[in-house]
Length: 202
Image (cartoon, rainbow, N blue to C red; front, side, top):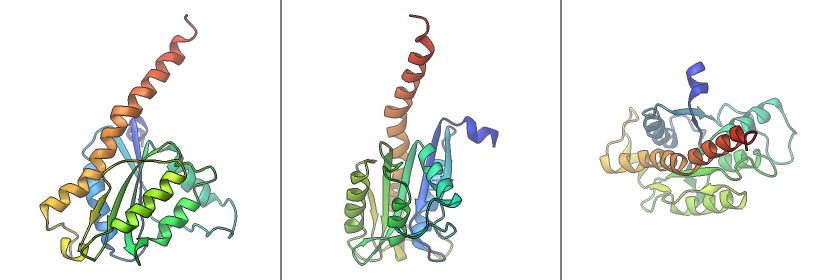
């Protein structure tokens, strides 16, 4: 755990499907594998199948909601992954966003988007809508969201991706987010630290 705390970048990953053996989780597995190659990156995977997040208007600030919100709040960046259901993103992703507070702890955070769908046009519609919701709450949605079409043909029964080009695109979600953080957030944090430390010595 000590090594985890020492890592300068922390990514919260939220898979948006609760179906057993879902394809969203298989795609997220590639993202996590890519993130594991970075020595300075730690990940928190927020499994919405295990979390008991209330719908809007049901319940209040439970300890589980507080932990969920705190995990996202302390993250340097966030990856949201969703299947496409009836032309939109999953309801569990929407519930997750609703439980991130008002104002949302997503505000000001870079967010990478990944969508999977069984159809031939992929998750384009769901990603467009999810981008709109994330932007509305103040998130910095990164360009190049990745949509995977025909997902049931892309992964085998063992969860391995059978299309190298698609696998590269999925892994690119992780690379794009880390590159953005390294290029924009880490320098700013270092500058703020320098200013604080030198402020008492004008």
